[in-house]
Length: 235
Image (cartoon, rainbow, N blue to C red):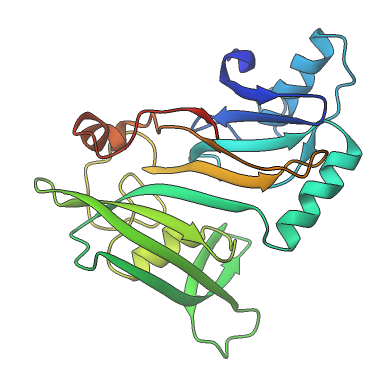
């Protein structure tokens, strides 16, 4: 994987790039490529200090745009924004079934099981339960098979949140081998893409946004039909 081909923007403080589905952000497995090692090697090859600060995460099977810090100061500033919910992330997802409402909010309480690396919806009174909130808009539908394209904005960042909440609502994500029990014939990786990220630049303070178009097979119907803008870059 040539990481330089996936870089959208870079300056002295940050690197914004596209993470392909299947590539982990960080990995402890010997010999496995991850975003951190790929970016550190990229910086070292340019003769720069190979420091990469992690600000947020994406699950391994999920594609999307990510921002990484190149200095400790930038990492601290971006991490503070993440804690204060000043970094906005937007997702496209293709879910199985027909979403009837044009827009909606899902509110659940989730409990993570570290042994199985899964989360589930539980009652508010369950020890360790964390509140999960997301908002969605219906963008388009596919008739056969019945699938819906939704745009999502997260209020909280819980483990597997989007995947678990939509599965609990009866519309699991297409291609999700962990939470989709519909018997769907899977189309490549999970149809979930973090397509847009907005934050204040850690040096200038200017509010900026970076956006990509998903490349996953699960999105192909909606890309072909023009339901997803084919754009990439900064605004």
